Length: 260
Image 1 (cartoon, rainbow, N blue to C red):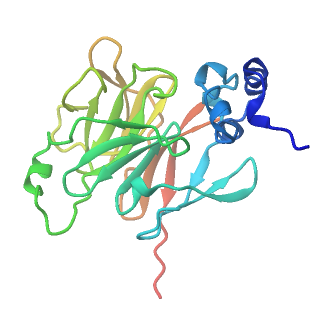
Image 2 (cartoon, rainbow, N blue to C red):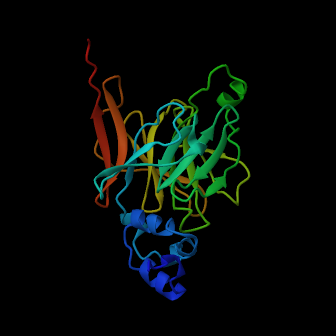
Image 3 (cartoon, rainbow, N blue to C red):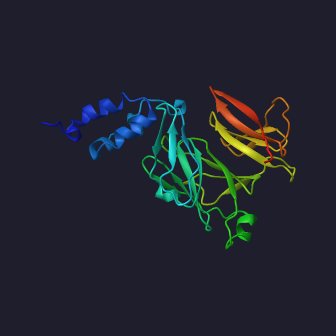
């Protein structure tokens, strides 16, 4: 007679959950059945969220609700069912997706594995957004987003955006009703090209290769990071902030344009 795994004693299911250290396996555990899903909570996950190997999400094909993802730990491709992302812009941070919905610029945080949704304040604090409120084609307002901490771990988290290709804004869901802009420098010409969240702080790099850290503890404080001089961005070079093996790196990417 086949065993009914959904009828295991709750204490045994919790014991199994606490022995899983890979977040990808933990998500599969919670998807097995309703009784197991009820035990697949962050309190029962003993692995460290910060040490999980990321799953790579390939660019979505138009009108495809099943984007391909590549698991580095498993060495295989998987399909995700993401009808929420169809035809919309997607950005990722700490295992969550930011979905920017069409012309209204409604923003939603979405967990791609369990489809948990968190509605964010409408992004309407930008003159650029207001100019394009009823556009004939959607503008690229948001270019990057980051989370200071994961909503899976805490209800106190901060969402940061690069918008209009060069400006910064943030909100604290549940606390802020609107997005607030951040000025990194007194210079009006400064252009932010990338951001990443590292050790509970947000780091940004500008067009000239200067790195800044944003402190959200008490009030917004911005300070320049003493880093080796880097070439600025150009048509041939792009700058990125990357966390690797517990270190924060500024990566200079050479753009090769090949004529055909």
